[in-house]
Length: 298
Length: 305
Figure 1 (cartoon, rainbow over the protein chains, first blue to last red):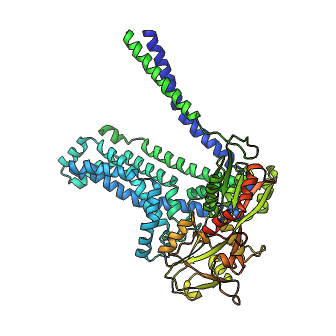
Figure 2 (tube, each protein chain N blue to C red; figure 1 turned 90 degrees about the horizontal axis):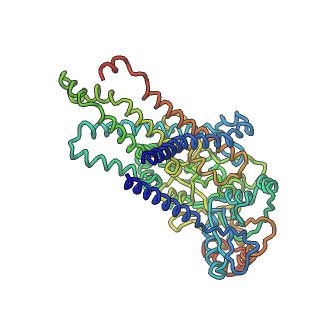
Figure 3 (spheres, rainbow over the protein chains, first blue to last red; figure 1 turned 120 degrees about the horizontal axis):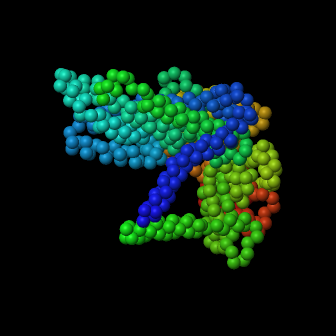
């Protein structure tokens, strides 16, 4: 019996090891494939074309700037909207709300996260965009702002869930100590609990941003897909074209091996690097060296 | 100890059974990838048909009707845009590519270098309708005016006699044959030398329905699409070739008698000469019953029915 137990343990350990390593292998394989197809673009197209300001691939205009700016604007906008609301909701659920409200709110937020992105996009085109057009007297409701709001709605559940969990794990003793020293509830929350949960909150925000950058269907439906450059705050209410929507819309029509094909993969590489940068930043922030004072006090 | 062994063994056996059932079910795919050229009389043959979104409803209607007559032929129809269909023909993954525009020279070159010999067949005709919101007071435009609107030279409706509103230009995506046809024949007025492009703030919407729904709710918008996609709640603009010509509304009659200036042919491309099942299908498409389906869907039959 001892032998068969060791044998099954051996198999299970091996299987788990394979599962763990396979995650790295898959990501590496995807990255390698992207590089293989995308780096060709650098040889086929002059680099100066990539920094030009027009994206019109069927006539050879491969300017990536409008696409980069489009993705950035929509992501930054979504983050600016989602982070305050998300953090506020998380603080409310974790610290302020009574037990019964908390048990209702948390599942509701999860439900919001379960809505498929196409459904939100559909609601965006038919309901939200016309409303915004009338409200702000815009030429059209299909704009970066509309995209940002919908993306914020999508990343909100992620941010709220993880931030709320992070706030939950702050030890009671922190709050009690702060209140005992005479601080008010809000001072405790803002100056003690939230900074203590900082790493979890940063993770929550980074995951939310990660979801926003990669979102395709919604932005393709509501941002209008017009490749324009950013010209000041006003153009936040103008249509934009994101990298993800470009790949989704055009990948079907390219002949394998053509210049357009390689450039689309190059855009994929850029997207991949964006996500990688965000994850690395999150990792660095979370694993930063804790100050000596924090180590002593925790 | 023996009992624990047996339980562990049973769990492993269950796991193996579940995995093997999953694999067996996964292997049960319908793998009839017959190219449609050499079918046996008992076997079902498949025709893969892909391409233009403008033509996808027409292709579907044809496929359904044909499969009623010839149940031993399976025709699978997908959209994706003319560019997608042509790319698939070049890659060898479809038998018939639907296109609402002609293949470009560079696409022909790609095809030849891939060993494909594209054969162009005109199967129907279509008109491009210029559509605006029903509340828009404009009734008619010349081709030059439409070209100036879409290239960015005219940006306010007031410059062509409408209200003081900014013009929101709607277009199909670049993979659409409708888009390419519009670029060549309207924006560039048919001149191959001109390099005018769409204005950069043109909204490129992924589907005809996207264009229609935006026009329905936005009084600033102007768009274009195939006649078959124009619903009665949209307003169609009468177009004139130039300022001296008559302004003509698009319809089956005005396309057949060539008075509507923005009319085009709809194509099916195949590799080489049609043989076997594909040849029979294409022959049927030229029959009166198939061309009647063309008319029912809002397109224009190739000859007067």
